[in-house]
Amino acid sequence: MGRVARHPGAPFVRGEILDGTNDLEVDINNIVTEVNGNLDDTNIKAFAVIAGSKIADGSIQTEKLTDNSVTTAKLVDDAVTVAKMAETSLSSFAVDTYTPGSGVVATVLTSYVDVPGLSSVAITPGAIGDLVILDFQGTIFSTTRTYLVTFSINGVDQANLARFGSTGSTVHCSYAFAATSTAELTIKARYHSVSGATADVWTSGVMMTLLARAIPVK
Image (cartoon, rainbow, N blue to C red; front, side, top):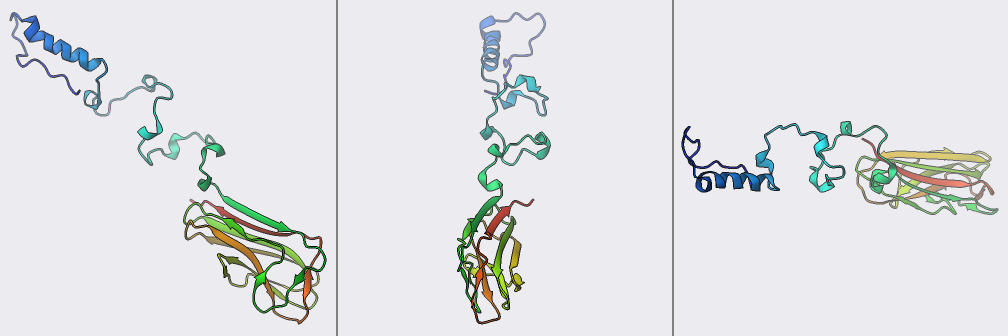
């Protein structure tokens, strides 16, 4: 309702005889009506210190808080559990593995092809600027040939990232960059040979791994 207004005849003169109905009843009724369920912002002084004990537990709902108003200082250290965090606020993670058997050919080409057996993996950065980390590991039985390894991101091969070419070579290729959008990223491990004319085989029984991860960065 707002502030309670006094009777237009107030203040009264000492010794004046008041009419209860006309002079006081309206004031008293206004006060009772206001106090009993109609107090609002206009009845509370600016910067009033209201004790927390006056607020019932669980009575403040999310929609009553101003957006972006709760700061780190208001949260107890280690108080927020993973279950309370949106999926997009956590790191996005994807992995694929493949263990080749005998005769898995490492094709001799001068342009990139997919690493055999490994599927593409997909991750979705939660925000622009998230750290995206890609990693591939595999072993190829090679004697005289040299191989280059890279990743394709949404169908685009990146620059040559790793080079190897000795017998039983294990290649470990990593790549990191800042996400420029929150669109899904499809990642593949890719390779090609740069020397020799005979195809090799990926070492049987040794697992290949393709991993992609997007990590929030503040």
